[in-house]
Image 1 (cartoon, rainbow, N blue to C red):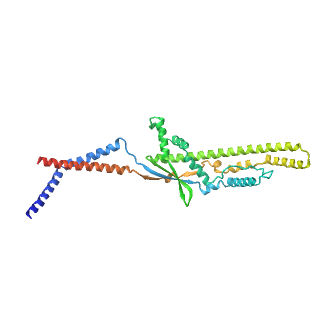
Image 2 (cartoon, rainbow, N blue to C red; image 1 turned 30 degrees about the vertical axis):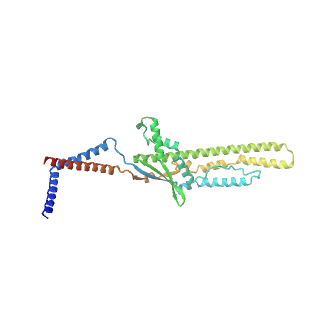
Amino acid sequence: MKLKKRLIQNDEIDLVYLVNIVWINKFKIFLSTSLPALFFYFLIISDDPVKEIYKTRTEIIPISTFMEYEYKIFNNYLDVKKKLANAQEKNSDFIFQDVEATFFFEIIDANYLMDLFVKRLTDEPFLIKAIKNSNFIEKEKFKNSKEYGDKIIETISKLKITPIIRNTTVNKWQIHFETDIPEKYLNFLEFLEKSVNIDIQKYLKKNFEDTILNQKVIQNYKIEDIDFEIELSEGIKNIENLEYLAELKKYKEKLLSDKSVERLQLKFNTTPIIKSEIFSASKIVVEQTEFQNINNVEKNILLQVISAGLVGMILSIFFVLISSRIKN
């Protein structure tokens, strides 16, 4: 019993002794703790500071119902012409089809415009041009053009465009990207939206102009064919042919007086493609971009600095105790 009590007393003396030794050398331990932590902190942030990396998600939304309604006049006229063209195909035996022009042009609605928008966002040459023009990736930071070009391709590969499916219907899309320059990325998205819309507006104008030009060529071919038929019929002298010749001449007059091309042009001029100063096929909702910090640099640096300090403290306490034992 006395032995057990003596052992307990010795343990208490040893513990008090150790605490005293640590307290006497507290400034050494403090320095040994703080200096490694400070050194490690400045080492991290001085040379090549680690940047926060964010995973982002940005929605692409279609034009509003109100904006879509501005295509109604053009779409209604085009729809009538397409139905007429389909009826003529079914009634191909009819000699003199409706003289008004038929047009191979898409109905312009929110879905069609969204499709055009997404196609450009997934078009590599278009994205390369947009990245260069926006200076999203600064060329002067690279040693040569190859490194710069490789970085652009790498950036494009990280830009993911995916549909948002609701009730089996795709009416929205989203852009996913990881970046360590969030403000610059938002500026790039704004530039990208503007570039895509300008490009689509130019495309629709050019496509319509080509359609109109093509239609005029078709009309001219029709007139040439009728002139040929009239020339042949004039050489045949009988009553039945005279009645047929009269129909040919009447049909030619209708072709010459056909104003369907001009009417379609007027309808097209009422669309936002022509009359809007700022055309929009779809919108990238830049201001609602979601950011998720995926490496939390500040938290990681703090943990590393604390770890360095703890290691320094433990080693310093161990060194102080060993030194004290050796002296005694």
